[in-house]
Image 1 (cartoon, rainbow, N blue to C red):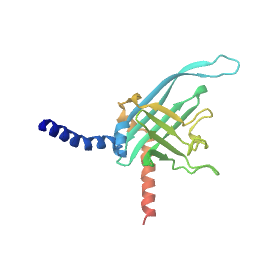
Image 2: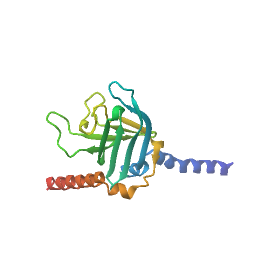
Image 3: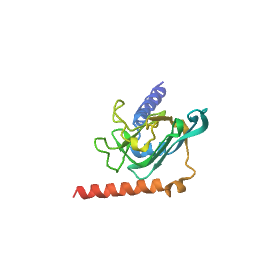
Image 4: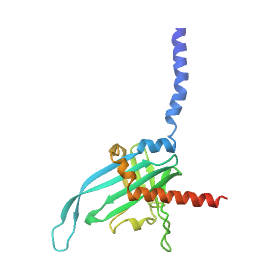
Length: 193
């Protein structure tokens, strides 16, 4: 009887810290490694031509996530919409207030907010948005066609390994994102002096 009680007490004591460790949210670096990959979603779309029937085509949304360093991930979104409109945006996102955020280095148009694309991660899905709050204007409209929007969700179980990683890292988008981040870090280090 004593042995059973001691065994149960020992198991309870040992399981306590393990339960707390499992409840602890992952660090930004761990989260980057959990979500890195390519997420694709195919769907039927169409192009409208006045006086003609809609011309159907197979469309595909693509989100790529690649850890860049301990603090940033490369994020690219190519989202397709009805009538051939698209959103295309890519950059390095850092972890801020519970989300990965890409800040566009291009200055905003007069009267507009700077473009900021947020990637929120839950247990089940990834959510992209360029709105500060759900009822505010989109901040990255310049990257979208008339029918496009950077409000997008995709299930995490759509994640696949990027088999073209070397080619991706040589792409114009990836190299530009890395260069923009270097310039930003250089200007930030100059400001702190």
